[in-house]
Amino acid sequence: MAYALVLNSGSSSIKFQIVDPTASASDRPFVTGLVERIGEPNGRISIKIEGRHVESNMPIRDHRGGLMLAIAMLDANGAGPTAVDIIACGHRVVHGGKTFSAPVLVDDEVVEQIRELVPLAPLHNTANVDGIEVARDLLPNVPHVAVFDTGFFTDLPAASANYAIDLDVAQQHQIRRYGFHGTSHEFIAREVADHLGQSVEELNQIVLHLGNGASVSAIRGGQAQDTTMGLTPLEGLVMGTRSGDIDPGVIFHLYRTAGMDIDAIDDLLNRHSGVKGLSGVNDFRVLHEKMEEGDEKAKLAYDVYIHRLRRYIGAYMITLGRVDTITFTAGVGENDATVRTNSLADLENFGIKIDEEKNQNGSGPRIISTEDSATKVLVVPTNEELAIAQKSAAIAESL
Ligand code: ADP
Picture 1 (cartoon, rainbow, N blue to C red):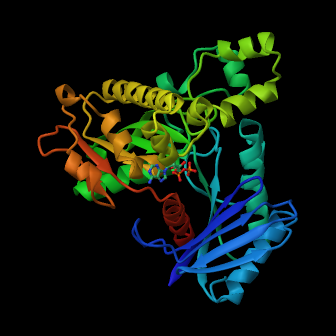
Picture 2 (tube, rainbow, N blue to C red; picture 1 turned 90 degrees about the vertical axis):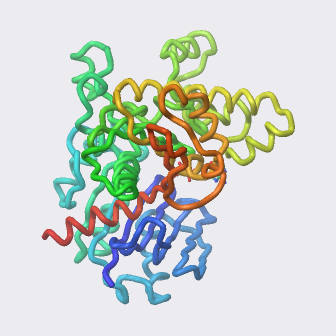
C-alpha cells in the first residue's frame, strides 16, 4: 500500500503521521507520532503503529536529530521508509502569505519563499522551514509538498481581506487578513458535501472549527468568502488561550499605563487570554465541571465565548444570504454538545433548529438538525493530516 508521511513541525516538536491518502476521515492512521521537547534534556519520541505504542526518552538536540531518531524507530518497527512505500511527504506550513494559494512541490526556491514569509509568522514558519529542510535531507527520493494553513483563504474577496488602515502601510508590510485553519475548513466543506451527496459548488456553508485555536468561515460554492482569523491567528473568536477580537486601543493602553512591553502584551493576548484568561482553564471539559460547581469565572468565560461565536454565526448568515449548512468540527465542536446547543439556540426564526436527541448522541459525520430545519446543522470530524496526505499524494502522482 502507498502512504504519505505528514509532518507538522513546531518550534520544539514534530508531529507526524503515516497515512493512506485513500483512507476515509474516520480511519485510524497507520502511524501517529510525536517528537517533543526538542532542545531540552528530557526529550521524548512516542509513536503509535496500528495501535501499538513505542516510546523513547532521550535528549533531542534539534529537529534533524528528532526526525532521524523517529525514522530509525519507525524502521526498527517495520513501519519506516525502508519497509513502507512512502509516495509523498506532506508538510504543514502555517503561513503562505499571498505567495501560495495551493499546495506546492517543494524545491530550493519554494523553501526560500517560505523563509521570506517568516516575518509574518516568526515561530511557525521558522519551524516549518527547519522541518522541510531536515526531511528533504533524510528522505531525498520522496517528493515533498508544502500545504499552507492560509491557502484556502488566499482569494478572500477584497472587502474581507483588507483592514481599513493606510493602504501604503498595509502593502509595504503585507498587512491583510490571511486566515488560518484553511486545510480544515476546506476539508470539512468537502466532507459535508460528500455526506449530503451534493457537490460543494452548490452549497453555502458556515464551518465552525472549534479547537484550542478556533475560527469560523463562510464558504460559498466551495470558495471562502470570509473567515475570523486575520494577519495572525489572534483575531476573531474567543479561543482556549487567545483573546480573539479586541480593541487595538487595549494594546496602547497596556503599553502606556500598565508599563507592559510588546512581548508581554503578545504573551498576554496569545497565551493568557481567552477562556483561560477569564477562568483559569482552557479545557472545555474542566470548564463545564467548574460551571457545575458554581464557579462564576467559568460561567463568564463560557458566556463570552458563546456570545462571540453567535456574533460571527450571525455575521456569516448575512454574508452568505442563504445558508445550507452549519458544521461543527475540532475538539470542542466535535465533542461539546452543550456548546453546539447554546451557539445555535433560539434561531428557529432563521430556519435553524437542532434536534437535541441527535445532538447528544452519535459519532462520526452526522446531521444534528431537525427534519424541518431549513439550514442543516452537522458535526463532522476534521482530519487535517488526511487532508495534507491527500493533497501531497495528488501532487506526487501528477509528477
Ligand atoms: P488544537 O488542535 O487546536 O490543539 P483540538 O481541536 O484538539 O485543538 O481541541 C482541543 C480542545 O478540545 C481541548 O482544549 C478541549 O477544550 C476540547 N475538548 C476535547 N475533548 C472534549 C470533550 N469531550 N468535551 C468538550 N471539549 C473537549
